[in-house]
Image 1 (tube, one colour):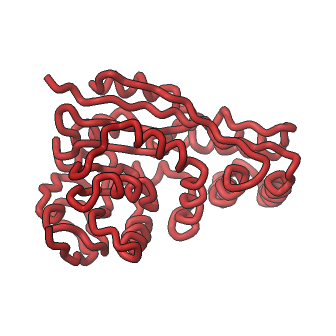
Image 2: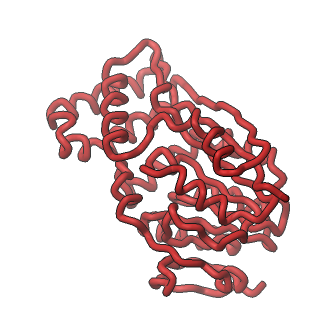
Length: 307
């Protein structure tokens, strides 16, 4: 397939294509009716843009091994077409692209156009010609029954209607195709010894997320959500990282930094207390005698009915 160069422009059907090298096949896809909804963007409580991309890069360092093991167990063959919904900076889309090869195709969608532009630029610099990134809505079916696999990580926790988003994802999958979801239970984050500043931040994060319509403890609900959406033979695995150093400890600090302004503006905490909280979290993150965990990750996956 001959690669073509696309330019960022609003698509007539409501999806937005961003600068990346895509294939002739991808440009010919029927993208369906969709748009980015106000609800989806406003329930996301963590800062986006380049600062958000830096956080997602750190997050991928924490979760990459677990995600890679999950993808290795699924029958992802060269030539398959995969969709990554809520792709963020595109890290998992790139993992999928290496599995499907030059004859395959990966599409990553995200509501944040700045993420799409950053992910597209990275893919272009890395010479990945089988990835296309589009700004799009998690609540609308993308290319109905067109993909062999639909994947999402840490998206449903931010949405006010995760069932609707999951139904849309299932609608994008061919019969017999895979639906693969990873999401978190933030209430299971721990430190040892227990650090009051971390416990306090988790309390604030959970309150902010819940009040904005999200579910910070959605992870354990994934298997049931998948089954109710019609996914068959659902399998489940729990993964949780913890450490005395490295990205897993930095994750709590950088997430707190990226939500600090929202917490202060919404009256959850005063500016001075927030400053002290960030300072104490940073001290815990660099202390080699303090153990800090990432959220508990629930991986759930299965197939769309083949009948």
